[in-house]
Amino acid sequence: MDNNAIVERIITKERIEPYLRHHKNDSFKAISHYKSNILISEAFYPLLAILEVGLRNSIAFQLSLRFNDKQWYENPEFVKIASRFQIDRISEARKNILSEQKELTSGRVISELSFGFWTSLFDT
Image 1 (cartoon, helix red, strand yellow):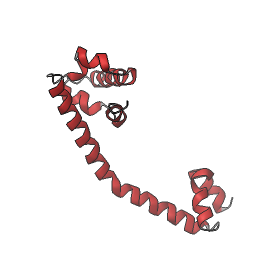
Image 2 (cartoon, one colour):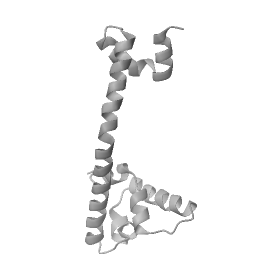
Image 3 (tube, helix red, strand yellow):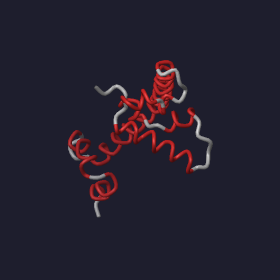
Image 4 (cartoon, one colour):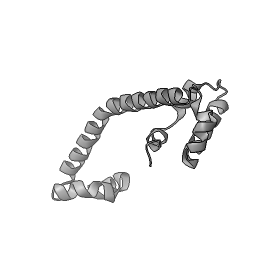
């Protein structure tokens, strides 16, 4: 089995194809370029994690002010305006916490909700 076949089997043809095209089918250069992109992406992870935590906590703080309730996600006024997606994510978060036999706190619910949940709050 040649190197290209091994690479395509592990990484997939669709993922490595742009790199191979860019490097005129030179597998070594394509794989090196691919690895470099992984390292660059890795370098952004801490920044993205900080962004996510900061955004999540800032939104949760504002919602607790808006609904005058630390458990705004259970507040009837919030539930009225929440989407099905948001209600389902909150239910899943609660189930996950309870399945780990942990106390259900607003901090745990807030941290259990995904970035997708938080960004969905900005949907029109």
